[in-house]
Length: 329
Image (tube, rainbow, N blue to C red; front, side, top):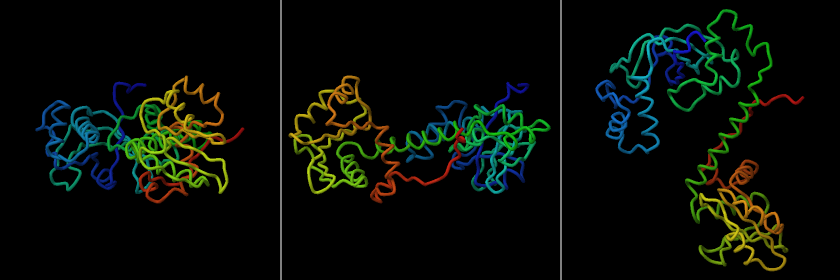
């Protein structure tokens, strides 16, 4: 690629008119003031961010300070910018035309750079993979995976050579990325919000959504049995043990569940993590105990999400959407 030394940046805004009419790109954080007065290191930006936003979480400090630093110092004149505008559903591609400019006349987007827009194109001209990459949740990010496609969009005749006329072979990968991102989000929220005993009533509610009657044991009681479940009024009884630990479950832990079971009982072990090889082998050889790991738990949550208690749906907010998938052969 002729412009391989030039980086390609993706950027989002809530003010399409500012970008398109004023020929600028910009990010917010007005309380940070003129970024050139902070210093030329990432650590200096982090320190300033904490000073200005003392209640910011550790992760948001690193993310916010990093974007501000990149906008001020890493973006170079001549770099390319890809901006998806929501108001007209177009992809706008331009080239950075100035160094960093602090514009205090703006209410929100005070951190700015001049840009020369080169092309404004309908989203339909790009592959699903390329559109997914610029759908990042971050305000400013590097475009890497589909950089060549955006550069090719600047060539004459690009419109005739795109997915408008050809089947989009990125659909499968994009759909898989969306699904995996959703699963990652669910597992992280479970781990963050339902550590320890808090995971037990959630699992009980999930079992209830699946059609089971459940009784949650008092904390620390019933020989390590956390939930007792029944499919109907009659046996068999299902004894459930729940673990929210990050480390994999060992064989001895499952054996403790087996020891609490009486003849005719079934066992269910639920963990956010996984099982050691010996534990997996033990489960294979003990068919009356079913093990569910974090990945399988998430699959069940997605399947029975609509029937979960409202407080858990608020804890793990999901929206039903349709996503494109590859056509069956």
